[in-house]
Image 1: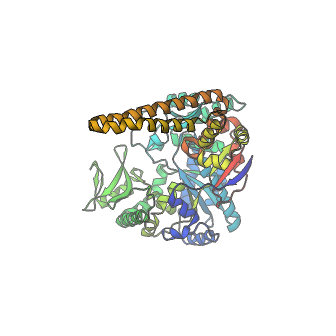
Image 2: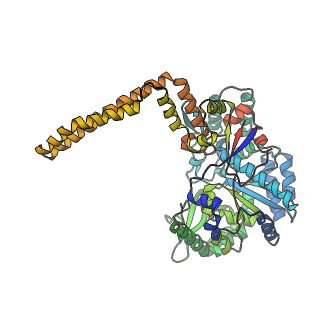
Image 3: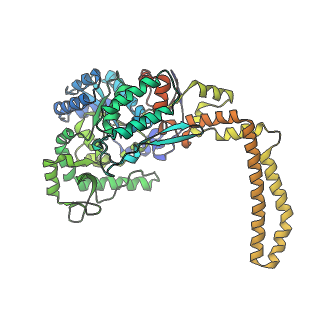
Length: 541
């Protein structure tokens, strides 16, 4: 396995400025991610803050015992009890088979930065992965994409569920899940690893009560020696620890909402994409009402209610819920980072481009509850390349960077045209120009017979030109049939390196990679050292 740094440009304008022109957005963050001194500065800050370290460690031990985590995980949890320790943290929903590749890339990013800063600071820096088990949008995590000939095919699990039930509360339908898992494995080529992998995944599935459990167990199969500590944010015992922090969010609720709303308006005025929706009346908290997560808003009288008035609570009643039934409370994307910072001594948060976009509005929210926003570090980004694809690129003299960033559709057309004795597209355009010239007297004459005939003449020209386009398309199809092997190779490159017009890590799942190279392929990926100022890494496996 070897790596190559490539310089691909972000598609989002805000993320581009964050990485390349930080001075343009510096007022929205506490720390400049490009300055090496930020970690020592941040470490000094968290040393002044108090945390429920022992209680948190106790909860982490229990949940990780349930997942049968490796011993190294418990060793790292023990280090969290040390008041001098810190954490590097990232998070994600509990996707099937861990979801898109960027999930495992986030985990590797956490491991890398934690290791690097532990060496720099000289104190324990624990890698933590926050599983957003309270999220209820199952449609976002109930599928994976796998290559199916000339396309990426979506494989969705069949599961009847409450539309607003948290994923950690969603009991696995073992029959449907086993059927789904067996099916996706059956669509992979048989390798030396396939049988044992399926057997292991079925074992982890049967040991899982929820999809969060299945996610955690698979993560530990993929990175057993890394020391990554997994944390389910929806665990009931976590809610007990969060009581004082929910209280703070309620007491300062209006200030949080106003600050976030103002920052979003500033982003819009600057012409940035706004991926976060927030209004002045948003409470940025969920309340579990009759088994469904209900997003709360504040009305003019200061009451907290669902958007459809399905629940109405005074501030005092909501504070009583926190005291007596904290399990009913959960955070949204605005208050989750605050809760994360209350619970953990966060040395740095690692996020993707979208997360960094909405974190850009959160500085006032942190300040409202007396916290300081931690350093926000862009996660590492990878594209994995197998030997077959590398050989195809060499054959057609295509660069990996171009294939990753733009795909090879244009190169496919150029290659095909260069192998035709007749320049089909040019011939087609020349014929259309000549027909336009010959047809012009008819159109000019049609003007004498009124607008209806004139319009008919224009349609007639369009009809003839469409037939020419159809004919040139058939010429191309005939060429493609003649060069079927080469066309399949171009398609293969696009599907692997630029699937659905974007990065591999946003579409591909771990399954093809662990099936081909073994479940330790990501542990081996983590053995190298990566720089966080490198936009993207090509990984040759």
